[in-house]
Amino acid sequence: MTRQQYSVLIIDDAYTVREYLRQTLMHLGITQVHEASSGNKGLATFTQHQHDLVFLDIELPDINGQQLLQQIKSHTDRTHVVMVTAHNSVDNVQQSIAAGASGFIAKPFSPLKIKNIVERCLAAKLN
Image 1 (tube, rainbow, N blue to C red):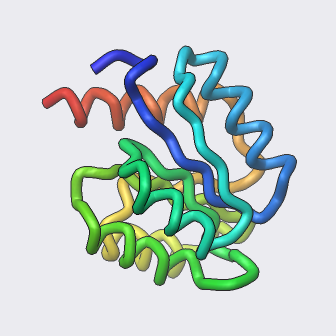
Image 2: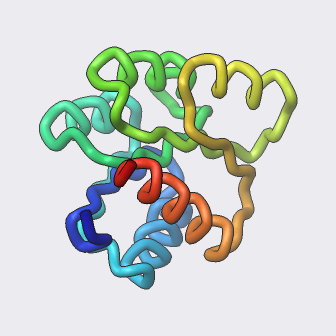
């Protein structure tokens, strides 16, 4: 699987975060990027496309990101889900990992952090 074949979904209610992630992913050569501004839209998009990687905000206006993580994982366990939050608490990290998240990043984050996560998830997908 190449980066061009890799499919990513960004679920975050903040346009600036979605745009920043999209631009960073495009810079990394990932061209299949979908976005959703709410949990319900994100789940609908995920159900349609079955993405390889999902960046999922914990605090969405319509659903808790932890609940959405469980719904995504119930569809498939082959998708890597990275939780995104502005509130980096130990409880959030522990709950996310216990529910099957592949990673956890706190806002604001750097392009290097995104690159490292993508490379780690892509390598796991190839194995």
